[in-house]
View (cartoon, rainbow, N blue to C red):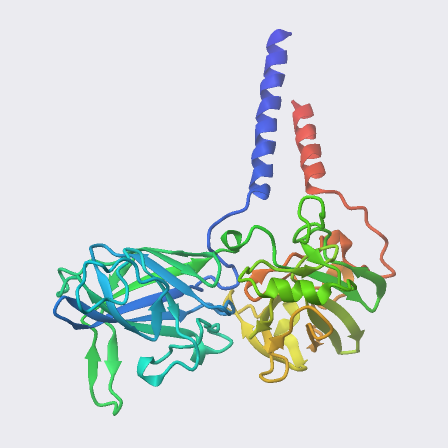
Length: 451
């Protein structure tokens, strides 16, 4: 009897450990910088040594944004690194360091920066021409590769002293950091690659850098922010239910522990609070008080149903009083994007992360019309309508098929409502929903009883 008891206890312990392992795989969030909709997206920093000097070299540093839909918005990028030896920066063009550091050991000619770990920022628009180079002076703003490839790079020139003067004596900088403008990017080590080649203006001669190394930086939303930055709400013509963003998606209203975490739009002190917060350099969102507390909400409304087509209305609302979103973009995944017929007042580009499967679309505003999403308030929204052609073999409104699988705003994944909350067809009965945990426990209990 005791042997049977211990065997049963051992089996139960094994099942309990298995259950905890399975639950952990669904609970823990991965910090890996991998985006399923843009698997090859990254920011590549190319460091080209263009010439040697008496005590170092002159380099052209270029940042290429190879991300399809994630861009760097104002106040722009900040690039940092640590010198391998006792290098200094004699001069710069197209950029500047934020601090000069201690240059007291120099007499006469004072370097631009003597810090062991300099931090560089882009120059602002309107910089004198004699301080500019190509792709500089945009305030650190870099557009995404798919949205605006002609403005998806930024560059500066740096003259380095106290460094090696040959390919064998130069030591590569290390510990690169990129803020855009906040955290989220992780940069790998510098790697020497084939020297960059340049074509002269007349196209008749090719020159090349003395030496080139690359640094690759990848983005992780988990590292960028502790809470989500956007959410999705749903509605349809066939059901009166409006499915809101899940409660406390991006935080909860709590005036006891976090007073002033949001602003009531009806408050008579709204203007003074917004202007006071705007004077500081704090990048934390100042949001309108809502149940979800998200800076941005995307609403997907299944509007009309025709014989051969169906229509959707998309509305993006800004609840952040501290941020205007210029060059915003939206990425939506839905199986009917392979039959998108017409789009109103938005630009569209198909993204094919899965090769021949065209189910992902990138949407953004029309220049000088709605490419600027204003801060929270009466003008803080943009909207458009999408017309899809039906595919008779797949089209249905049943089981939430008409709603998107996922939505990104400015490269960040937005929180969707739970599937059981989606608006259902009137002629379909309400199905009882059973959580995955209940099903798993039931199966394991049945399995245990079999022994």
